Structure formats: C-alpha cells, structure tokens
Image (tube, rainbow, N blue to C red; front, side, top):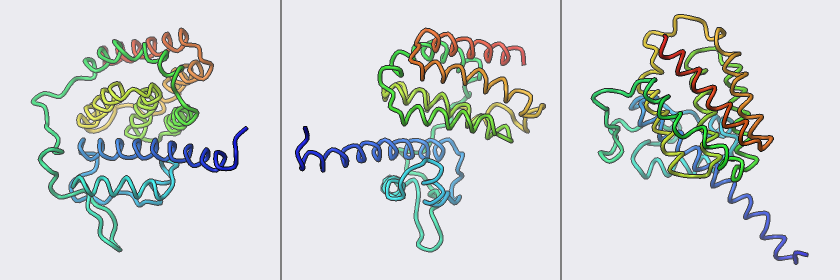
Length: 240
C-alpha cells in the first residue's frame, strides 16, 4: 500500500510524462511543418489556445514548446501580435531542398519495407494516448473536406502509429517521409482532379481495419492490414 508521500508523488509523475509526450509531439509537428515550408517565413502561427485544442494539450505545455522553438531561432513572439515563423531560419535548421524530390512510388516502396513490421512494437509499447491519437487522425480523415486536410490526416494517422512504437529512429524516418510529401505539395500541383469524397470512405475503412487490429492487439491482422493498404496505394499511384 502506498504511504501518503508516495500517493502524492505518483500522480504528478504521470502528469509530467503525459506533458512531456505532448510537448515532443507538438515540437516535432511544428518544427517539421516549418522546415517543410507548410508555414512560410514571416507567417503567423496558430495561437496557444488553438494549438492547445488541436493537440489536446495544456496551455503551459504549448508555451514550453513554443519557447523551445524561439530558443532555436525558428519562431519569434511579439506581445500583442502573436507568434511568427522567423524571416530567416538558422543555417543549421534551414531545410536543404533535394535536387530531385522523392516520388510517391519510391516512398511507398520504402514504407512497405518497415511499416508492416511496426505492429509488434506498437502493440507492446503504445500508451492509451497513442491509440487516442490514431483514432483522432482517423476521424479527421473521414471528415476531411479538402485534399490537403485528407492527406494531412492520413499521414498523421500513420505517424501516430509510428509514435506508438516509441522508437525515435522509426518516428524520425516517418517524419522525413511526411516532410517530403509536404514539400511536393502532396504530389498534386493545382489540386486533385477528382473530389476527395471519391476516396475518403475507402481510405477510412482500410485504415480503420489497421487501428482496430492494433487495439485488439492482433499483430498478424495489423501487419496484413498495413501491407494490403500500402500495396493498394502503391498500385493506384503506379497506375495514376
């Protein structure tokens, strides 16, 4: 049985762990978006209140993350005006544009090499918060009204799965994949020729199968669902 002091200390440690997880997620997403050009130099970032709601995180966690980005020279804060992307990024942080961006086919082939193996780690290590992030991304995918929102939600789901592995190298790989797709404007200059509703439900259903298998801790089913989904996506990309 816990004594009085143990009971007092146990709760804050869990709160701190959750706060740290949220801070890392917010930091990673915002930094990736800035370096990928999703937020242009000088553009205004969402408010702390908006980010807090978007990431389901405490305001002080968001503020801590923003201060870290300020320290790295990626953003500047002006009292009464808001937070803005720095006009000039530090040399060490400035994105290096590749001479030739990776194609969607190349990225899908790479994803097929490691993503179907992720369920073993995710089932072993994922916290309830990781599952909640997957479900939130899945719902965002189903409700997406534009192609950009749909793509962000779809890749956000698979990034949430990668984060469930709690393996920093795997997470870093997928964040680079996400940055590459953003730099390529999702590979659809000028917009997609068909409405997002044409593929939204099918993608939602396929990815729902992945999440349900992970929640059920059914690694073989999750591996098969991820592999089938990526193969179908690769087939569509190759024929498109």
